[in-house]
Length: 174
Image (cartoon, rainbow, N blue to C red; front, top):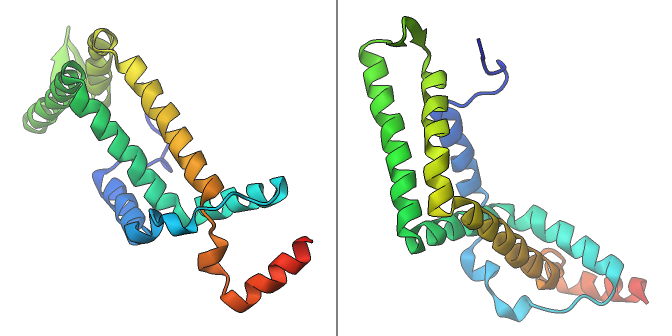
């Protein structure tokens, strides 16, 4: 029988805690979209340092940009939205029925994870017809492009390094 490893917790409490941590570390959106800080990097090594610093500093903002793109993709694709809602609804109904009594199939009692897996297998053809693969790769590609563009051109040093220390930084680069 398939079981998840003990150290891997998929409880709703752990998910809520993780989302809560993301919300706590989110930077102000006005700072995130401030176009006054957009500058082209002076060199390739500077670009790589800037990208790493921006991803470390704005990682929660980038996560919510990703979630926003997923929401946009679902809203603009009604068939995909219906397919996702139907799958999640089926999982919810199964969890309610499973709390009342265990479900058995051909004399074999199925665990809740196995039932969710069965719903996933049955949902794959519907997701295929709804264009979930194209939507998934569109979201991944667009997220990567937007995040890479922002991380490359956003001058994080204007925020993290005080004005008097920036002069020393310019002298070191020359």
